[in-house]
Image (tube, rainbow, N blue to C red; front, side, top):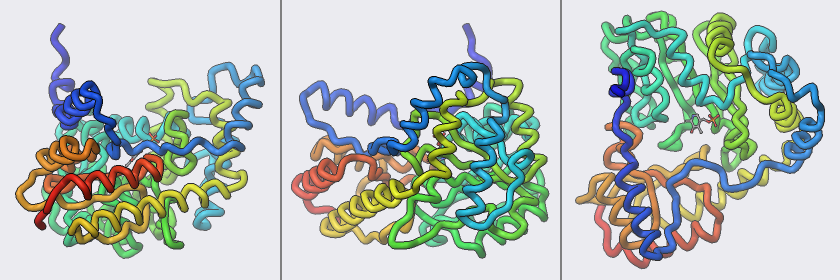
Length: 390
Ligand SMILES: *Cc1c(COP(=O)(O)O)cnc(C)c1O
């Protein structure tokens, strides 16, 4: 049973070794605290759950949904963008419902990449961007996100011959894993670049609502010219603690949205309508829970930043998303430091090289565990890691 070549192209799973060590530590009775997973620990807000319960009892919702999503959900997305950033979208042509944004991120490569075509992907980055390209027969080209550039890709460093063969460019701000944000001038440069080389920008923005101290991340779609060159992937997952519900969307350029919808209508059958109704409540209903959620993440961010600063790290407080991305101390690789932290403190942090080669030298802490456990994790690191050098 030989697997297809495209399966062999999937890179090895870089977290396998740490997963093994975690399993071993647990088997030995260690009370492991995982700061490794980017999955909100807080529950989905009650208004959304209540709406689901109602919608589940409506037998019309038990049938196949529309492929591209209920028009009411797509209208809710359009209204949400209007309220959020005064962005105008036609819900019928400029929004498509996704089974979580990961689904659309993987599928968009099938819509646009021929064998030999390039997809420009951030490194470090969410692995689906490059895997989507590989599965579709394309080639992913890493755009390094370097600290000295504020973790923004240097577009001028992309060779012209690569840019000419590129069909897609993925951008993701607020960024996973670095926590970086992008300003308008960067997006304008990216849009110019996309116009010059005829590239579709796929902005992945699931963290746009997770932000602190009054900071308001930009939506790609509010940048002039954005809709001419691209789309934004977005999701209920991070904003409303709904990762398990599997609902997201893509919005923007009508041709790209149409292509993605056409591909999807051939491979999936849409999102359960009761879930779409609940998501409408999330987008249009009371938003107080979001303020509470952000307060919790902000407090956790400060606990981690202050804790690590006390151990010798020099770190800025991220303005958005729920990750901290520190450098590993001198003398360690990403992998060896993460193993050291697990061994000495029983705490799981994620090695940066799991997000691409330019993630080497960093590790990621996710703020998605209870505040008490997070405090305990930081205390254990303080007490057990010894003197670290930077
Ligand atoms: C969580 C995440 C997503 C995907 O979320 P869905 O649950 O599939 O909507 C997409 N991109 C990034 C960068 C993420 O961290």
